[in-house]
Length: 138
Image (cartoon, rainbow, N blue to C red; front, side):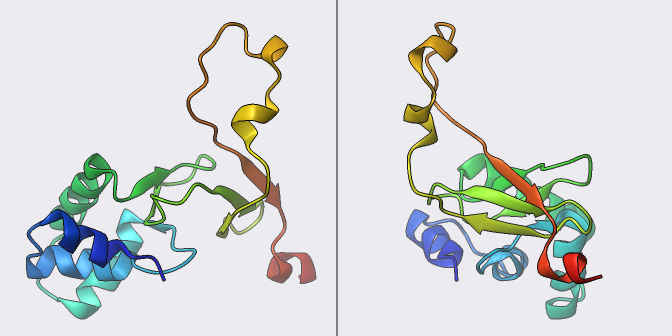
């Protein structure tokens, strides 16, 4: 499980019932939901929650740095609560399933100076692609 709810409490972020439900929906390992998926799951827990509230809450969580906005292809943006542990993504080329992966090594230092072209590199995004076991079996 991610520690999203604990992090938000620690920041003193006001957890209204709507914000709490959005955070609960996002909390977990390998969670990469679209805003519409977050809304659909939130409505089950809190039927009166609006789509606008979900979008606004996701925007706040991204602005706070507590949730990452992930775009691994030309599909809808997804929201990743694993914002405080460096990781990469493994994406199924067929169904779009996403898993967090933690390979060894540091991709920042793996880029040779001759390939930096004078850039002061501060961040790296790596996306591994392939077929998940379910799609590979089909």
